[in-house]
Image 1 (cartoon, rainbow, N blue to C red):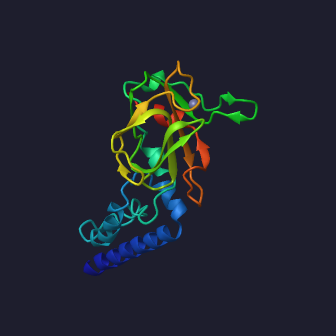
Image 2 (cartoon, rainbow, N blue to C red; image 1 turned 90 degrees about the vertical axis):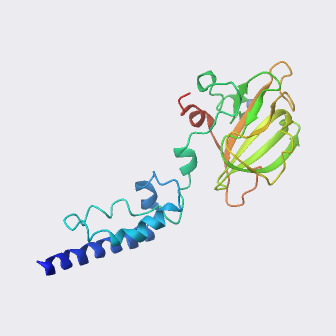
Image 3 (tube, rainbow, N blue to C red; image 1 turned 45 degrees about the vertical axis):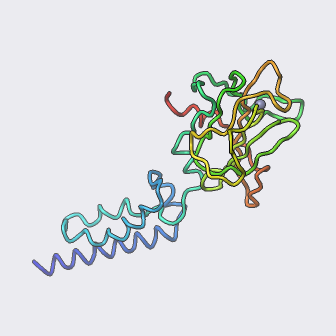
Length: 227
Ligand SMILES: [Zn+2]
């Protein structure tokens, strides 16, 4: 009987090792099957301890390896945006008050590619996610603006037409989801009668320039949350 247990144990460890090996060499597949692991730090621990468990529960060696493939080393590209809804960045505005203006025309060639969130001048504006303040920029169309990266530096969040920045806001500073970054205003080309936050998201490319990327519609991300 003992030899049988030893044999099963050997097989179990072999399976776990094989799954771990395969999981590591095919990260894309691993990412798709393990969407729940938001914290990359936790996964390696689970992987390391997994082979030690089977001795206790001999009968089910094949069941344990399944959750292992451990999104371990690489974090899925759109994990953060996909799994954690963004915070609605304007105080006192709920998701159902938003209108999807992403595809609205702006002139003949351009589309809006952003969301306008209407609120009285001076309403606090919050960071939609954890990350870093990358650039405080003043432009003709955007007025007083903030460019923020998410923690993975995968996306740039753009807040425009601000009335003013939050006190002590600095380029390079880390920012937490919900921390105030400024106040709604009409700076830039905003209609002075319609203060609003112009909020845009774009996916950074390999160059990671804060001013360029592929536009992402914020509407589904901001309204995914039940409020
Ligand atoms: Zn706008």
